[in-house]
Amino acid sequence: MVKKSRKRENLKLTIKQAAANAKRTALKRAQVGLKPPEPGTSFSHIKNPAKRSEMVHLMRTEQKRRKTKARRDRHDAEKRGEEVEKKVPRTIESMREPDETIVPPEDSEVEDDEALDEFDSYFTGNRTPKVLVTTQKKPSKKTFDFLKELVNVIPNTFYYPRKTFPFKTMCAAAAERGFTDVLLFHEKKKEIQGVYICHLPKGPTSYWRMTRLKLGQDMKGGATCSATHNPELILNNFISRLGRRMGRQLAALFPQKPDFEGRRSVTFHNQRDFVFFRHYRYQFKGEGTRCALKEIGPRFTLKLRYLQHGTFDAKEGEYEFIWRPDSQVSRKRFFM
Image (cartoon, rainbow, N blue to C red; front, side, top):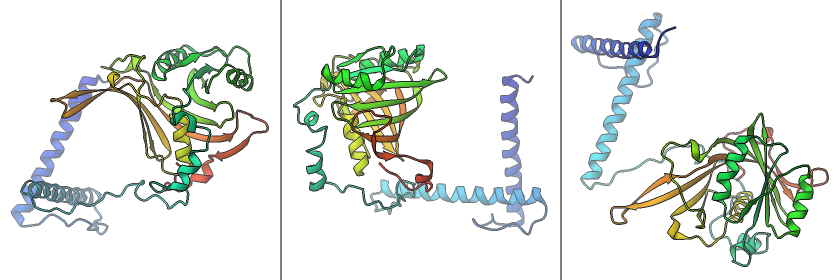
């Protein structure tokens, strides 16, 4: 078996040989007076595959050189104070298909509807969240390690073992004891697969698929924090009616009065219907002119699978939203 050091040496030699060959080819073409091929030129008429590949490489090199020169010229023009036309990059988010559920900024009708929903009392300060966290039956060690960190992330959170109680029974018992939300994490093959978020006492209930979980204890150079300080909450890119409703449900898990002395922030960033969770501690530098972030953990990614009206009911529950693979065939269609 070839050692890793030998593989690295072979890779360096291959890159060095390719650069030497490209330099020699460019020198020969310059001596004869041949210019590099223009970007977009077709070489299908060249039958020799080695020569055709060489010409394609020359064309791409010339295209990359022109882009680099244009970028440097724009930077130099900006330094001289000239006006430079900046192009907007084409991304999937910018090419999103138009949707009638997208909420324009400062929509009074939507704000009036949200003032009457199940989460309004948390944003007006009339109620403090109290979260119950549980798991499936016989959870693994990694799930307990994750819950240890999650209890420090969400204030006023309490863990109770599942034992043999049905989830519907636990939701009813939690509502009687003053809890506002129930989080149930389930796993598959000793890996956390998803989470149920049931808002009490009248719902709604959402199920999120959880992926890319990384604990804070596994992060290199991770920061620490004090769990006694309420974090600052940041919600990004929840722009549709469904997105705003899901954002309010996630925000209702946290107190709406952050303690700025703790310098702790929790972020839910929605991008292409994937919600990225991050937990940071920020530190000011340069007399308050700059700010550095240190991740505390854990980090994970959520994907909404369904939203159910009312509390959890697997048999007779009414669904407000169900994600299906055939409902998102186009990559430019998003729901949140």
